[in-house]
Image 1 (tube, rainbow, N blue to C red):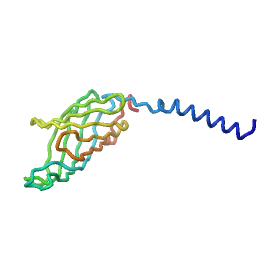
Image 2: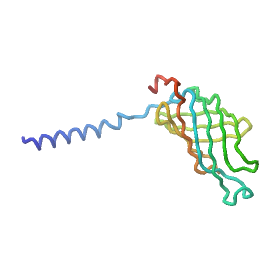
Image 3: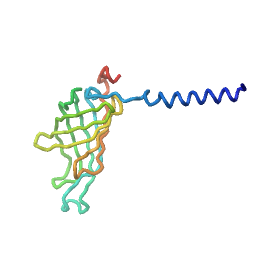
Image 4: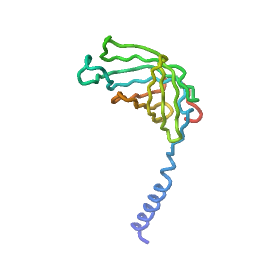
Length: 161
């Protein structure tokens, strides 16, 4: 057997091996414990407003804050500062709590409670132990993507190391 044929067979065998094994090498293994600790976040997008504020019905916004996950499906505390065009003008600040569910495939859902009866819902993707994203799923929320990064110095959970 010549060298070319040997190389071709090795390549074919490796290709079959990687096609069979590769999907399992990076299989997701997430749970509520995948989010544990303090994360900083930022976002920008558009929010619905009344025509007296903007005739298009939407205005841009930017937001930043902190969120603390307990690893058991609860957001124990969070802060936010939002800057947008509103009837009152200027930025506004607040706090929140909430709940979350992280599925085994690293997707999930989040519900944030502002404490005054206002609830916001999001879809979630955990990208690793230090990073995840949200996207707003409520009616009237247009193009709001949130990017979260774990605060430096926070310990990783055993499951996500």
